[in-house]
Length: 386
View 1 (cartoon, rainbow, N blue to C red):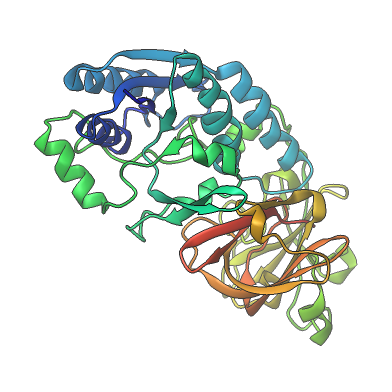
View 2: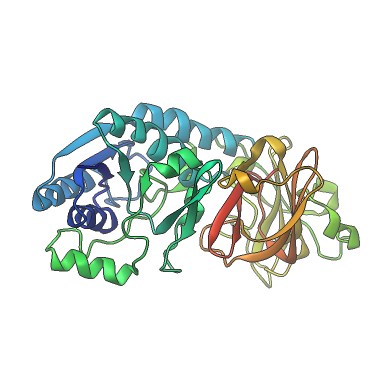
């Protein structure tokens, strides 16, 4: 019998995933990953791991499957939390959920599952996979989830063919409403439990409080850049890098507690009033400890048509489709979870990959992941450069 280890998170999605695998005749083991247990910056009672672990155990008992807890907190801190701190310190905007899937769920957790004799690991992700045969072996296709409002393929944009070949996504073909209906039919305790929010395995946190555990406050200037500053000419459309500002380009309108606490497109937490429209972060400089803002979501500093990904940071979920130097191809792209897919041209150079959008995109920040799709199949991704 084929054995599957399901990552039971204590939520409804993984609970139903386990139930469906049982229906399909798999030998199912439920494992709860304890990856974080420091609640110093967690918003009160928001999905504490103790409650999640208890719910996961109750679901396993209800389904009649073996259950155990796996403590991965040390490796999670090393690969995810330390990465987050380092990226913010460098003035970049990380996405720990993407890294969590690549480094934890489909790496360390997969290895642990295989030590239990598992042929596959399964999760409650809203995505799908298909397999086709080729002369060079099987090709695994990562397909968006049927529920477009819940599609989580973006979060798996850094996994590889080997990892996908060992993964199952039992609920990817279902709408969220159907998943909850199945949970109610099975009388699972998680049927009406709210979806978790915030950082992967950490929960909903006050990000400044969380970052201040290692990154100390460092007061600096907030500088407003006028749209009429003369900095935004036609050459901006060909600029593949984030705009570089100097304090002399604008006027000081306030103070902040550290440039590393802010990201492009951020509106909240600036503490500057008296403006006709809200201020948005359009640039940061951790070296000079300055953040630059523009008034209104139409400010030209918020948008770019192009971005660059260094060659070392380009990842192909479908390596058979990777672009060679000099190649160009049109794909649908997104730079954040749940963003509507945008048409763009990918151009491969010796230095890396240039993504040129048909329409300007707001709040492109270094450190984010850009992902590109062919219709509903995720083809590749990369870390946006400065």
